[in-house]
Amino acid sequence: MLQNLTGWHALVILAIVLLVFGSSKLPALAKSVGQSVRILKDETHDGSSSAAADAPVAPAAPVAPVAPVAPVAPVAPVTSVADRRVP
Image (cartoon, rainbow, N blue to C red; front, side, top):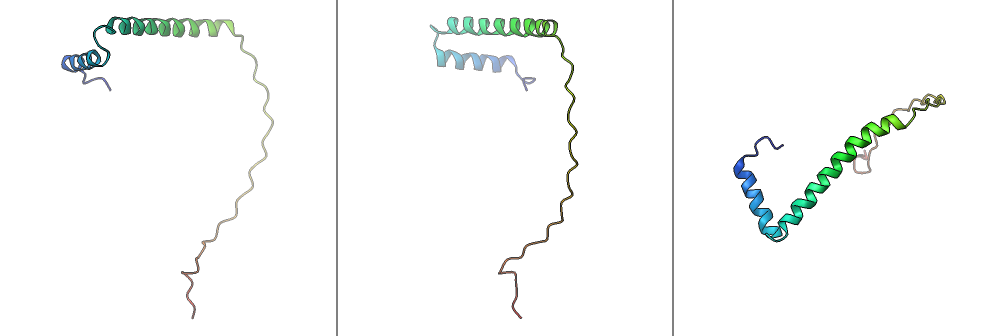
């Protein structure tokens, strides 16, 4: 999706962000995005290792057998009153 992103595209995106948020809010926006990325990385790194190590794996409960499905009768085509021809 982002294979064709060049330097010019990045400059245009940066200019649009600057116009939308203004130069005064840009540092706060960058800081909050950085914190969000850091939190996401920490949670994905900690969550994958601690969840696998902490949670004991319980054996699977046996599943009750399911009755076979009854065969369905073929459906006959329906004709409307307009399709019927009176002799």
